[in-house]
Image 1 (cartoon, rainbow, N blue to C red):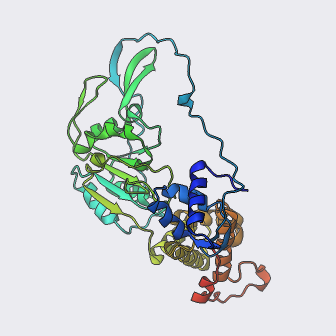
Image 2 (cartoon, rainbow, N blue to C red):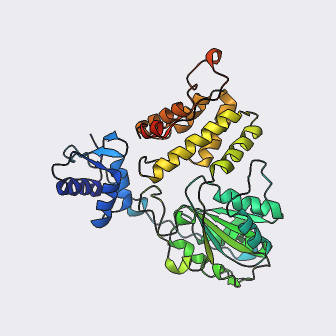
Image 3 (cartoon, rainbow, N blue to C red):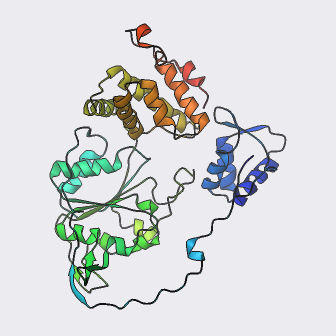
Length: 400
């Protein structure tokens, strides 16, 4: 029995009606149909996750006759609230910051490998120019770490702001606080970064709302007036803004990042360049995995080789539309850390892929056993020879 929203049920019924007599369909068919008929990619993605899978990227064509409508969620804002009595406003004694811990020089990470756009990011930071950058890429491919480690290499101060749908001007610019019985204006991380000439990293910027428009003027690199106090902040030399996101600010048609929003075009236009961060190559990823093994005292060159081969194969299948999920570089590092605790390859993999649905989890584990044929064997019968590399036929026969 499926639990569909009204939009998903409408999409499913319309899709089935337009494919009369068809017993199954491929995932791309549903996405294309949704796009051509005014449905969102998010609706198609969440619908597809609930339909019976009968093969690699193939789903059963069924109607929504047994649909259980999803219970509407009532927004807290929609519930009438009794107005709270207005609090007396104390006189503003001074403008200050309650804390400066946000501004710091990040520590160098021994597991970091310089690759991709690292040298370009480093040159831009080193130039001391105001040069806003937007870095987009899939989750877990090292976007944030690249910027952090560029600052660590150059000994540059850095401020990281994590964006959520609730982030507003008070969180970014600052607001009034009660401190030691006195009302003061506490400067936010954006203002602190400007005054320190630091790098401002706006992480997951596509998770924010239109409240981020308060940064519009700051993205021009000009003096900024704090409306609540009238103070004008002039950015110090070296101040720069770098944003990271999973999308380019146009939303996510595939529905993988359903919290990603469409960012105002005028806001995006303030960023001088956009860098598209891919996943690392197999050679780079192998170095990253081996570095993490060294960090956690769990060196196993053969396991590192097979993990990377496994992750790369899954990503290739994902790009071809044969699988709905992906194994990121970050997840490979999670597996290494788990392996350092349990000293068991398969247990580490199983625990770290449990976040996926049952079919995907099973397919990922099945593929790994084709790559590492000794994964289920006991230590007594393990061969000292490397397990054979899976053939194209082995990969093709793995059901996702």
